[in-house]
Length: 217
Image (cartoon, rainbow, N blue to C red; front, side, top):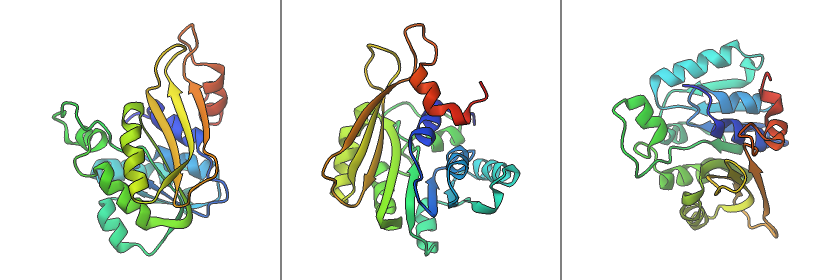
């Protein structure tokens, strides 16, 4: 699976900070885990239900300069939660969110793009269990799903501390929200915006600046 703009944005705009252990949920080919490894010294676990994707992620991890700090678990998140004793400083996820769209025939795409095996409600419950009391959860979701997701997160006592609204081009509507949540209420939520393309429909300077460490151009 190719690296998409959503993962590029999430991995670029979320800082691992001083995290010593990070979890990437639904890692796919492993890109978010690799981006976190590049930006930190943390031990990083990745969970991926799809067998082929988990194998690809493991191969990518083994070939990377950070292979001693990366591990992929080809199991469900629910089983991973049951088996692990670890609690995480940062959990990051580009979750399946096309809840109401048509279901493609290919199972791998269904797993990656639909809330079949991991609905957002279940994701939040698992995250709350696996997160340290002072930890952070970062995800990217469609802008029109954000109010629903925020309500669900706050029901489980995860509250936004940072919100980044992503616009495809100047004058357009926000299509994605990157949210960073934590178990404790914050006095002031950090809110910002990023526009991917400029008026000429080329990558904007702000997008290139945010993702420069992960592009070759």
